[in-house]
Image (cartoon, rainbow, N blue to C red; front, side, top):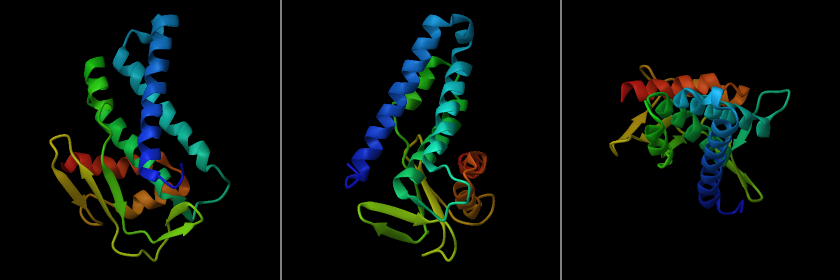
Length: 177
């Protein structure tokens, strides 16, 4: 499947959503006291799932490179967390999860090793760093390295495995949009 990264990204997303929904239903059924606030429960499940994804990139040192599909998975899920935080009901949560976000990083140098394609997470960049995202109303926004958006901080967050830094950069885009 590694040779088909778009298909793998879609399958990863579907599996992630299914597991979160399954965990939500399990908790609601067997631990109803924890499910009193459905929105808070689902946010907790989603945050835990996203933070545990870092285990796939674990190691003692900063990362110099990361597979593009892994970067995309982090961008997708930190963006989804921002969207989920704005939900007021379980119906809103399901609506958000039903649409996988389109968000992409451009600028890092890219190289391939066998069937694996990587972003280099350190300078020099191939071109200026930018993030683009399709918003809920189908507008597409692009953000570079100016103003409130600090795309190099996003690559530093990925390099150091600090999800809060990645989230903060994405939040700046969401807040400006």
